[in-house]
Length: 507
Ligand code: FRU
Image (cartoon, rainbow, N blue to C red; front, side, top):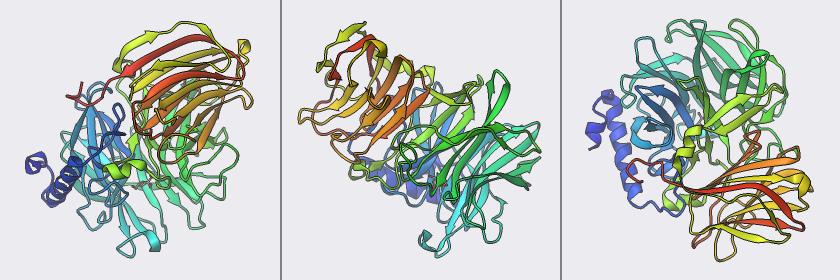
């Protein structure tokens, strides 16, 4: 009943939404589920990338996302939508925004949401047009647009609010918030001299926006565009500091850093309305994994700063394309700042509510070359592993997840030679194989590992570092094993949990 679903949408967009919904319905019928996530947000079918419009509105967490409902590839961007009252039980909502005007004819691109004083959900997004009408080969024309909703489901577009300055290509991804009664919008920009910048605009009424300043210019001359910027305060013992997240395009791999086609990171600084951003730290990745991009945050009603990111890739081949879907979001993570001005990211506490059949396996010595089966026939699980490294001799100790009868597996391990945690997909089964690695320090190590049907998220030392990658298992039942190489390991705690589905009606 697509016409009923979109009854509240403005008439010109309704037709586009109905067409999108019908096409997605057809794609959904042939979706393959061997890798379709159990506890990560994905579209019912088709492609997704960035999380958009994150907000808490009308008693529900609202998560929109870049979405192509016609195919499992990046094209014709819409805003898809899911919502939840508790961050763990999610409902698929109708597609929220479709290209329907001249300004957004080639894509309703990324953006954000705020709640206005009169109770409307106001979203800002980039209207995208290709100069040549077909693709980005000859550049783009990008403007910032506004749309409003009274229920979070049906939107009415309100036109362009920030026009593109002459000669500027790459001008997108508005993130809006209010400080001291003034609305602020930041955007990612490629400057006239080809440098990645974040520009700031301000407004009193959300309609009329004035350019305030170039808030940030990436010191790395290779970065020509900073996608999906976000700026927000977090407390430290010396007061609030401001975290600037962004995704630099053009940076080159260097050691363990910037290994992906698309990378996301942050700097921390001081900022106040009417002031420049004073950068206090160097750029660091927010996550060391192979697929972690375009994180966006919002403030939950209880004050937590929650981030979702896109677990996907524009460049690495996605095995799930042949199953009619592509891309998913990370689990929601709470961000906090240490006094060392480093971000920590931990899964929201609510996630523990998805655990079932939990087993505490105690503390023990794992012998050198030992493999111990922890879970069998499992496609969604969480493992909590604590190690006493000072009492361990193993060169590598960790988990083989998504282990299948043909010998395929993905490894999550502490590597004592490198003194780092690795996520290695050399024998994952399908898709991109690279390995990724995060630093760790100290004599004790905790790993919290979330394994879904097509992904692995690793949290090191209570979120001090994270590693997030796709992992497409091979055919057959999947198991999880603990292993040690070339020496024994002292396990101080081990707990395993199966994880239930996040989708309403699937438990
Ligand atoms: C980042 C991005 C954004 C853009 C959107 C288009 O992944 O390229 O800059 O708004 O995706 O889908």
